[in-house]
Image (cartoon, rainbow, N blue to C red; front, side, top):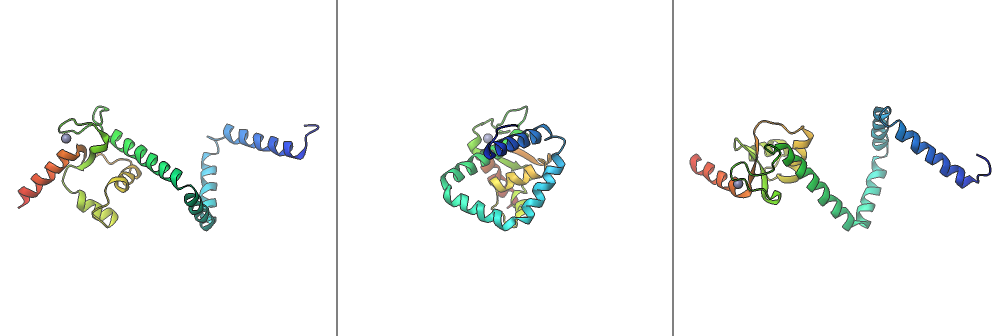
Length: 161
Ligand SMILES: [Zn+2]
């Protein structure tokens, strides 16, 4: 390219490089993932420091992103355990996502969470992440609303006495 100053040259090269990456994204997927893993491993401390600084300087935005990520995660989990595409309590049909829970059909939720996370109170997001990471195990989970979940708990405890 004639008559380009240095800045234009640089912009041109960056644009070309970006187009190249986009064009070959599928072909280079594994290589790029490997590069990313290696880079993150080698720059762990620097990345942690920059991340902390960004969170400090953007706490509002960071909260928004966290909330959005949790909402996406919850929706993905409940979409998976929905029956016929409907996200609702499998006992009474209540369908406000805010008060729906993933229920352990065999009443082993507390025991399972203790085994997985070392603490029985880790429900919610940590549990949803675990479900996603493990490709949504199909056995033993159902959607219950908070009411039906509570009633089930009371009845279970009563019949154990
Ligand atoms: Zn219900």
